[in-house]
Image (cartoon, rainbow, N blue to C red):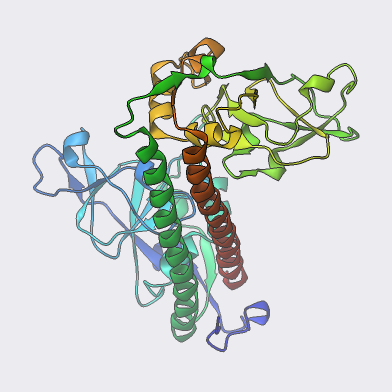
Length: 387
């Protein structure tokens, strides 16, 4: 990518100037009653993705009660509650937003509006926002403190060049996200199709398979084995940074060492229930924790990879939701409920065709997810090199 003739690693900042935040942006405080407004869009903090400058979903004023804030195209909604979540997104519509946010508008004579949303996502600004937040469970930023914070900014002509560079990088990320969305849509349509108009289903318990739950083990930096917690289990990959080194008597627990073609299924955990992974490693160093159920299909009428893909269907998700237990965020599903999962009864040739298609799509999805992750890391690095 051409970097607009800017050397970000050696930015000359001798002509940069320091400004108070209320010289950089104004807080828009126009309030609206959602019960009487003609506006159609409501943005809550739940509609804003962390570390994204774009708003891609929204609600309606009918969804909420109490006074809300008016926002206009070009404004930025910044979550003042739990600032560590790094939520700041640019508005491209006229609507209302949560009172747990600030509606901020760049002051053009000091801050170029196109650069402003990237400035808000810099570590410089976000760390400051977290530092001045007050409160326990829901730390919140006070405008009186935020407006007095001082930041070093480049001159306006340089700001425009920096904004062009950062928007070009953002365009790369957004195009990759569009590709991912299309791939995931195709993937889900194929899985849905194997359930649609299907007359023959079998319960999982009628299929020949072995299963076991993982181990409860403490992390040990000197351990020779790796424990796979539910937070590391994802379709297509294991999140390496979540894996834990552990010490375990491998001979005593030999049957719980993961082997190639095992299906990992999360039976509990915060936000992880129902996620699955098809294990392909062959080094006999991995175990799972007690929130992960391991299934080994031993049935000549069913492919293990087919069962793995079925576990990712909307139909299985619906069955999980119907049978979930727990009330405090840590939900779980029992082996009895899993045994009753309805599995489409396809012949082996049909299963092979489905698996072949989904295998290729999963590889493409993993590839584009890695590209997006790398592009976002580069984008974040560029922002922090500027500020």
